[in-house]
Amino acid sequence: MTTLTTMTMTTTTMIKRTILAVCLLTLATSTVAALSSAGAASGVPLSKVLVTGAAGRTGQLVFGALLRDARFETKALVRSAASGKKLRKSFDPSVGLDQIVVCDVASMAGDDTPAKGLEGYQAMVICTSAVPALSKWSLFKAVLKVPVNVIRRKKAFDFRSLSFVWKKGQYPEMVDYQGTIAQIELAKKVGMQHVVVVGSMGGTDPTNFLNTIGKKKDGTGNGDILLWKRKAERYLVESGLDYTIVSPTKPTNQTIFLEMETRTLAHSPCLAHAR
Ligand SMILES: NC(=O)c1ccc[n+]([C@@H]2O[C@H](COP(=O)([O-])OP(=O)(O)OC[C@H]3O[C@@H](n4cnc5c(N)ncnc54)[C@H](OP(=O)(O)O)[C@@H]3O)[C@@H](O)[C@H]2O)c1
Image 1: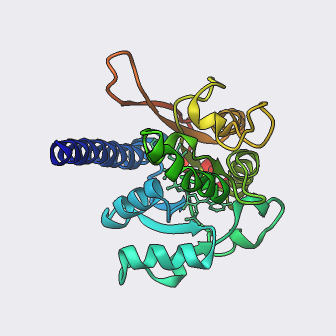
Image 2: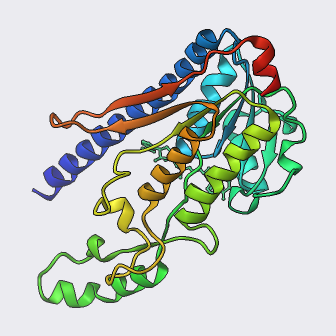
């Protein structure tokens, strides 16, 4: 019986992982297709592209897809040297150090350094996202409760009692709002033409589970990741730049599909250069 349960759980986990992998791949492929069609629509092929959050799950896939596509020249923006190392490990030896920009977007507002080396870059794909970490305190409490739960014949380890926290200064407001605005401003400073944001569903739903991460039971604390992402998307819409917002959504039949909102302004190659 136990073996059967374990096998069922393993199969379910594998199916879930496969679905996630397929969704992420679709996300990456759609992002590259969006860049390609945006370039075609404006008459200026978008060949030099910066991918931010490039060491993350989505970022790596987008960066990889662009690396493999001969139409694009690409650079990666990562939070730290350690993230850069992780990225190089995945793509080594194809990624040169000159292709990696190290920058913490949560504290880059007003910093001109990241713009250096991005001259001539035409597009940016924003894949940054605040990264939650498991609360060690909640893990400690869950472990302490194991013997009591076993005696009471309850589930030994209660996964639902675990909670997640944000690193200091890396809250959703700092990364997904202020950090995204700083990236949009960087795009403007460099003279980029098009910004793609890989977003998420739940941007208008305060009760979405992801919005509750980092919040206390009384509702205070630093959460609302999807709401902050949505607010940053509005900033992009009003920025005057061409943009694509990629949002995976879940309609009633529970299959995930991608919704894309693109605005490409008609402009001549000359004007695009001057932007
Ligand atoms: N994964 C999915 O299933 C999925 C599905 C649909 C939509 N999306 C959307 O795709 C986007 C990316 O999600 P993801 O799952 O790929 O996230 P992820 O794996 O957690 O990656 C986030 C990346 O952002 C970087 N980052 C965080 N804070 C930063 C900062 N202050 N400065 C610079 N970089 C920073 C992280 O750097 P480090 O590597 O240093 O931590 C990490 O590489 C999100 O908007 C998400 O909503 C994801």
